[in-house]
Image (cartoon, rainbow, N blue to C red; front, side, top):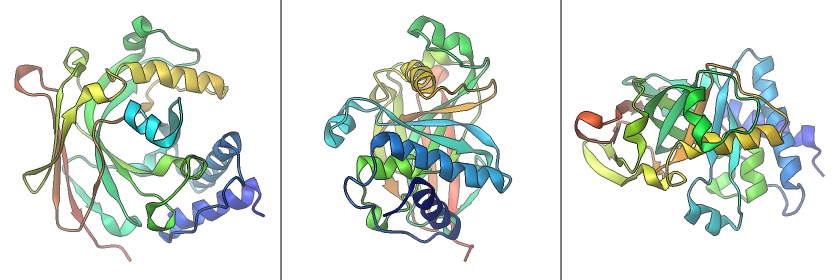
Length: 261
């Protein structure tokens, strides 16, 4: 039977070597233990020289919570090595079976070290940007349980963040349009993110407090997916636009290639 450290090593090796693994046996780990595995796996990256960059939230959609039979969010950790350049090239050879989903990203202005209220949330933020997350389960065939996905850092693999702004007023029910080669592949609204993306900051503060962790100023918070994810393929140009007109949050884009391996 795998221990916490053995499971963390398996997942870290799968991500590092871009080689998928089987799911863990059902019931082997509790949700609390899955978070222990997640932290231990990310710690191996830190020991190789990566730096903590922030956190990502998952299950910010009520429909997704119901689908997975849970009543709370899940979350993962971000490192600097996960950040891809806006408008740049993303090498799909660095992933196993990558998918992309549109998101909103925040950067903190002050350390988050206690639970926040909705009224306090914006005070702790420096800026907001349109973003896309590249998710890449390390499990074979992208199949996993709740505990599996938490242990696997909630499938977080990469992120592309657009231009920063203070346009927090433009976040409410803003249109979200993700395109491959200029054609719509996902269309939705920022309202899918907990009704309003700023609510993700409140939830993040509670999760951090429950884990006895704090988030330093200058950290990223990926608020959760606004639509379903789309499988990536080499050669496609990916763009996400959030909002329209003068109050638009903006756009973020990248070109997918395959050069590694």
